[in-house]
Figure: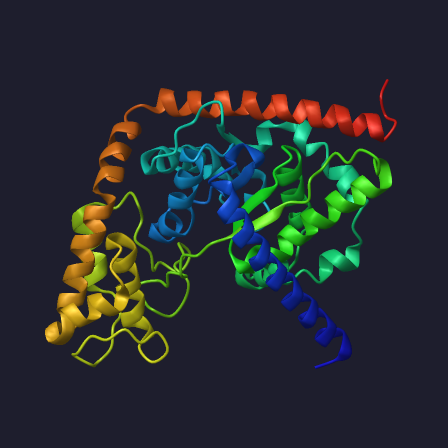
Length: 364
């Protein structure tokens, strides 16, 4: 390992340690002082959501919004253009995301705003000044971007992909979001937003900073692997259970899930990752510890494990799926949620852009 690589790795370790410490502090305080925070979260409209999204982020969004935390839920439609050719489905996928959100328990209103960032031009105007605050070398070495480029299989990297973290900074800072629920793999992106906020404030408004430095709220949910047991649950890998799947479809998918040759079920994430993954999903549904579930199944083998998982998951998702079916038949309401969200987001963005123009001496 070169000295540069070693320095970067040490810096990443420090960033992670500080993120964990700060996340724990925020988690304790947010239940007591919810209005002190504004959460920015969201998804790219590349298709329907699956149970990995549900357990990893959706349930947490519902929890935070019900605590009374002001929550901005972004549908990152522009970012689909960086590594996907599915632009012909963006509008359809956007509406499906909203259906998933509402079915999971998100309630749009004064403190909860759902919107696509392509419809908030005032926010996107921050992109140009923000780009002047980071160097090309800083963008080149972002590990999350490198990983996404590798996964996409892109032969030629477009500028949209390289500037992806800057656009994410726009999404977070235009609304002065100070908390972003993320996994550890997204910390490099968040660090860019923190860096831009700090540099903007220091350069243009050191006495009265405009932008807060956003902090991560790290997920405590274990990563859910796909049904093949080999990688993170992903639509592109075809190893998912979609929230829109029926109970019968769910049962069929779980029957095909990979386990191992041992009949006795035990919870051993290191040596039996496929079995451990299915036990974790049951645990997320029932609240029972994976070890206790494994002990209960015992010599019932993979068949019983899959049967228990099917029953637990279908029970957990039944209310969501019932609500989802109702919303599918009320697309006018889904469109109204998006339109109202855009109005809310633009009101916030206009105020922020006015502040930015003022401190940059660009008023007319």
